[in-house]
Amino acid sequence: MINHNGVFLAIDQSTSATKALLFTPEGILLDQQTINHQQIYPFAGWVEHDADEIYKNMITAVSQLLHRHPDKRNNILALSLTNQRETFVIFERNSGKPIHNAIVWQCMRGVKTCKVLAEKGLDTIVHQLTGLKIDTYFPASKIHWLLNDRPEISERLREGSVLFGTIDTYLIYRLTGGKVYATDQTNASRTLLFDVDKLNWSQELFDLFSIPRVDFPEVRSSSDWYGDTDLEGLLDRRIPIYGVMGDSQAALFAQRCFTPGSAKVTFGTGSSILLNIGNEKRLSKNGILTALGWVVNGIPTYAYEGIINFTGATIAWLRDQLNMITTSAESEEISRSVSSSEGVYLVPAFIGLAAPYWRADARAAILGMTPSTTRAHIVRAAVESIGYIVTDVLNSMSQDADISLDTIFADGGAVSNNFLMQFVSDMSRKKLSASQLPELSALGAVFNGGLGLKIHHSLDDLLQLPTGFVHYEPKLDSSVAKKQFDGWQKAVQQILYQPK
Image (cartoon, rainbow, N blue to C red; front, side, top):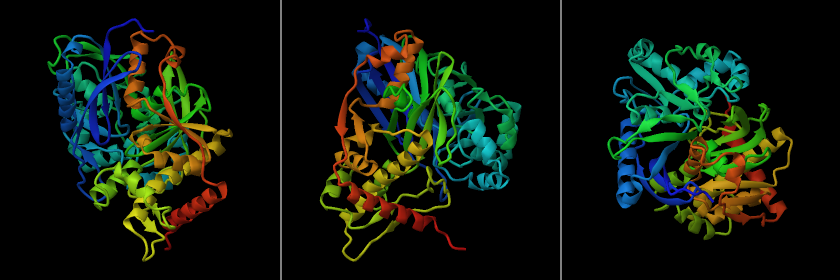
């Protein structure tokens, strides 16, 4: 056991909300406070966040959390941070305040730039250097767009009066009063400007996207020190920032998928499926990305990644746009109220399809409806769409990795939906272990903070800490599952087919 009375304060800044959490060093969640932020849609396909709102929400969430735990206020070992990846912001060097809304990973405004570069045949070199694809999901094309659309921002970036950062960089800069301008390797690796072999920014990629190589964040390991903060005076003393990691990699780390062949799926607004492939980078031939998982003691671990851009967001769409459900949790009960979707398929290409199709031009559709189709059938089709596309990605990963994935680990808010978890197991024909440890992305950052503070000394130490799972195995007859999945693939092909 760890002989320590201190706690970790964690920040989880996600697509929809900002959470402040208190963990023991062993990874036990004590309490949390969540504050949602506004989703801004200036034009069709554009998505923004008010970065100043996010920062203020973070401070407020911490204040509310510590108000409930005054005894912990002076017993915080460190602040750890995990964040939505790929979202970026331009902010003032002097004040740290944003000069433009954060441009979110879901935003489509880089599509034209991506198309031009792909038509020039540059996807291969980008894939080789980054493990990723030329796609508007990642910041580089949208940075290019912003600098061309707002030349005054380009000029200020060149002169150094404003700075670029992913969300982690921006929050750290403000928390430290501008003393630390840094990012971790997992976040840097998502920009399309980072060489995942050399573990540094790539001038070749900056040139390719016509982005000036100016003052970009220093790249550090996830367990490194990122300065000190008193959280805008909330604390009587400054505490160190240790443990910074992009949310999907942090969840893989918290699941302790430390050995090649172990995989997890995180169910959030979108979903990320990661499969540990070891210490050597390998590139996919089946629409799967190669991600930098983490770097420990200077040694990188890589992972195959399948990005799904609309999973939980599909259920939120039913709730917020169609008013078919009042809460996301209600989707499970309604799905169970009918024996099947009656051949209805919802393809959630609201902002295109990511892995394994990578078609930004695709659009969502509900197919197979008849006069007898009800609200329940559509809700069930929406929930099932998550299981289908997860299976698509797992199938592609298995081909690339040339291994048989017997068990996948699951985390995120949707693991409480037993119907969905069983459906994923049925469609993928794999055992599924849904983590009962809450808030795994934040936990992954905390584990890295523990390594940085030398509370934990190795990955083996982390393997000894508590775990807890609910286990699922395929129950649906394999022939029935195949028939349903074949129907899904036909539905996807219908929306991908675009006659001239």
